[in-house]
Amino acid sequence: DAKTTQPPSMDCAEGRAANLPCNHSTISGNEYVYWYRQIHSQGPQYIIHGLKNNETNEMASLIITEDRKSSTLILPHATLRDTAVYYCIVSDSWGKLQFGAGTQVVVTP
Amino acid sequence: EPEVTQTPSHQVTQMGQEVILRCVPISNHLYFYWYRQILGQKVEFLVSFYNNEISEKSEIFDDQFSVERPDGSNFTLKIRSTKLEDSAMYFCASSVDSVQNTEAFFGQGTRLTVV
Image 1 (tube, chains in turn blue, green):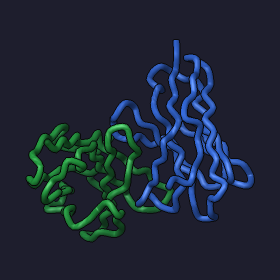
Image 2: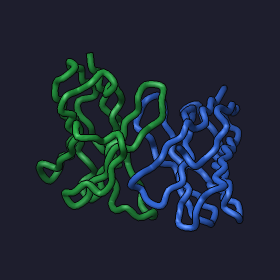
Image 3: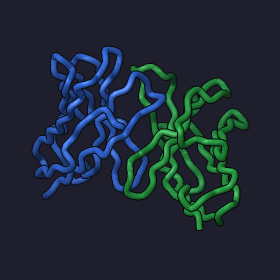
Image 4: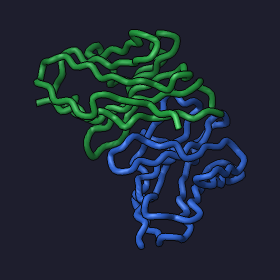
């Protein structure tokens, strides 16, 4: 079973920030937090990952709490093309990512 | 941007037939993976492959499945005798290495339909 808990769905207005929460209370010290998304039935697309520190790239920001038991993915300016299922995954390597059900994000005009 | 390429995009096969799904990973990547997603369900890990060996596999990856890197560019998944329940999207992925400071790229998938 996936080690993360995410809300099943979330709506966001175009142009606004989307904040996607994830709980991973059983995360161990060597496990990273990864975020992927899947648009329709396309292949999962990497977004961002982190261990302890907050991370930012051209797609998103990742905020990890100090106790590492939860994190938030922030899409700073959501567009219609960001409509997708977003997966939060914890793992100690790329080799065996356990995808859960994810959060269905719908960006509306 | 480099990408993982999978062929065919859609494969229809009869139950009991062998099927080979093909993937061309990104050229400098060393780690290769197969995942599958049954319609409406989660993405599931099947197998990881490095240095011409399986490094990890899931319970799904039984004796009916095999993987191979027949040359320097292709990575294949073979299902020896397909069953109806093998119908799914199959995704290939690759990464430079297995450590956390690199990305894993997924292909666009092959939709396998077993009839």
